[in-house]
Image (cartoon, rainbow, N blue to C red; front, side, top):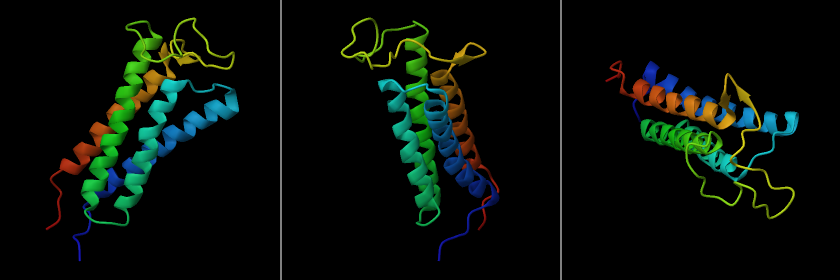
Length: 151
């Protein structure tokens, strides 16, 4: 029998499942509800969130639960770091590494990675993903490190 999760571990587990699920929901709502179709780099940010949801779900079923939660936080952080890079491309701080930047289009349907289609308070969707994901990953790891461990 495994040790039950502490309160902070349970909260970390809930965050590890809810945060990437909510961020993915927001991405799909913006895509299908508001016509903000993802560029290649937007998709790069979604894949780690899919992984995080899966890892957090595994943490509800299989030991070692804390390891699965920590790995889910790592996936959330990965999405945030990709988002930070993508935001830098959108803001013109550095050059992107994909074919979807600049004026060289392969097809008329390509969505540009270097243009933010929407922003709030001057922060693009990629920027918001970076802020929320990085902050969430740190929060999850902090909860896992909390001292209310059960014996």
